[in-house]
Amino acid sequence: MDSLSQVVLGGAVGYAVLGSQVGRKAVIWGAILGTVPDLDVFLPYGGSVEAFTYHRSFSHSFLVHILMSPLIVWLILKIHKNTQQYRTRWFWLVFLTLTTHAILDSFTVYGTQLLWPLTEYPFGVSNLFIIDPLYTLPLLVGFVFTLLPKVTPRTASRANSLGLWLSSLYVVWSLGAKVLIDDKIETALSAKQIKTGAYMSTPAPFNTLLWRAVAMTDEGYYEIYASIFDDANQVDIAPFQSNTGLLKPIQDEWGVQRLQWFTHGLYGIKQVDDAVVLSDLRMGTECRYVFNFEIGRVGPEGVVAGDFNQKSQRPDFAGLGSIWQRIWDPSIRLSPFANEC
Image (cartoon, rainbow, N blue to C red; front, side):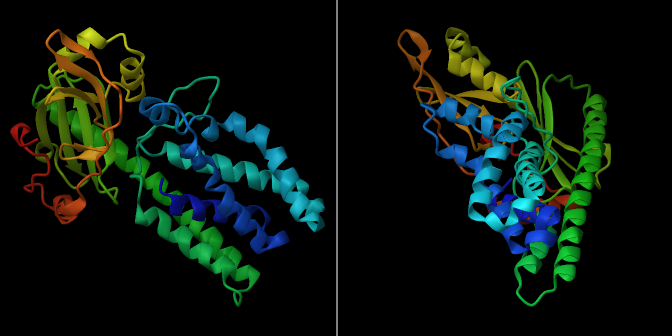
């Protein structure tokens, strides 16, 4: 999730665990620790594929969190020596702040290695978009209440607890919406006699009412949009080609195999000039995918391995108004035709 969500979640968890004993110190430490796991983005991994696939690994692992928590508590108690009697609560503040960060990240589509090093499997439930104001706002309000000087501890505690409850209920709602959407899309694909392999669904930007899905086929993939208000016959399904034949000469390259694994098979291949580009289809809108890698070059002797540099582009959010309209109106088309990409 975005940094603001992680900060206010960390602060909320910190205050819930230790706020009644140490006051705002719990909020501040919770907010700080809520950002710590994402500092792994500053590590020199050695390459674009490594940085992409090792992010959210050891720093988001429950096993690392439980091992590092005592050390962090020791450092905190060196600063706040008059809180030694709350050593156990400090441990739970640190551990829960770190683990709730990782759990929240696992609700997005990217992939979070919660059990590293036992397994590098990137868990991604994909029931929340990376930025969702309806999740963050209740936590933010509670966070502000805990820091206001004229608010009583009792009021601050109630506001903080309410924020945690509301945000948690929103997560539960998103999981239910995902089940509903997946069932609706499955019905729509079956009605069109479309057989698919790898599949994922994730909310469209900033909401959980409209969802985007990708379903892979032998020839390419389908990009799908479905609102919770749609009937199955109103689901928007658009086919796209993927030139996977370009992979054959370089299929044994570590970078290719690593990207295939990390994306759970949800990737597209295309040739751009003389470059072979692999796109992570899980993150992006309307043919603009956030993560693209130059995995090969097409030359006189065929395809050879590329430099695997990342060719990032941000999604075009200029059409956010259309996303809002599509929630209510299934006649609005969000997926472009294949020849428009």
